[in-house]
Image 1 (cartoon, rainbow, N blue to C red):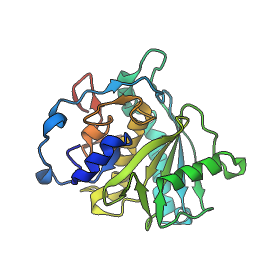
Image 2 (cartoon, rainbow, N blue to C red):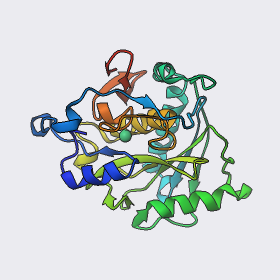
Image 3 (cartoon, rainbow, N blue to C red):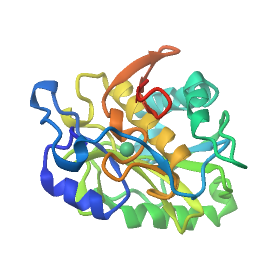
Image 4 (tube, rainbow, N blue to C red):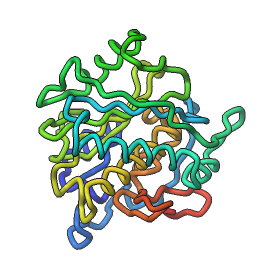
Amino acid sequence: MTAIPDTSTIVSSVRDPVRIVPLHVPDDLVKPLDGAAASAPKLTYRGGPLLTSVKVFTVYWGDAWSTPPLSDLASKLDKFFDFVLTSELMDQMAEYSVAGKKIGHGSHIGRVVVSDPAPKQVVSDATIQHLLERKLGDTKAGFPAADGNTLYFIYLPPGSVVVQGGSRSCQAFCGYHSDIDGKIFYAAMPYPGCRGCTGDLALFDALTSTSSHELCEAITDPVPGGGWYDDAHGEIGDICAWKTRQLGGYTVQLEWSNNKNSCG
Ligand SMILES: [Zn+2]
């Protein structure tokens, strides 16, 4: 968790197992690890669900996603999921398979633009959960029902801020994933309209990096803290936050490997 600039965020994330993509911090400002966090990362399995063949459904919340330039950004994100869910990034997740739960490739099962209701300027996690609960019961809304592998990726438009666990996107985080009652799995992706959430990357590359972070975490720890987790370091993506590589022409984040004892 070295990339979190503010100790109050660390305290709250210890109480709340939902881990966020922290803001990007330039390397020369990263503080050395201290105390318990200095131990080497090791994810351990806590017995909960895993998304063994994840089915990603992309949700673009707000009318702005229906017209350029955001409609172009959304279709690029859809293509990214089409690619990445059958890529070598998914093969990397296989080391976190357990008896009866073999992690394999996933699929991008569809997408929707939601204009009703319009997102508010400040969108709380409860509001995001409420949207899902409303739409999942509504066949006309075009949402697939949740099964044990469905993962809803919710992208917010520019001008909105997401609030989770008392902190705000672009002030403390750039994305997170969570669950509703251990049955509905989702990732919340605020618009990265700030330097803290793009770092040195172009906006689309920052979004694919943070999306890959949340994707791999949702696969290996869909109920935060109930799957593969490290009490000091968090989830698979947290350990390697903002370390990126190129894969199939896309920027993806490195993920922690227990087997290799490194980010890769
Ligand atoms: Zn994370």
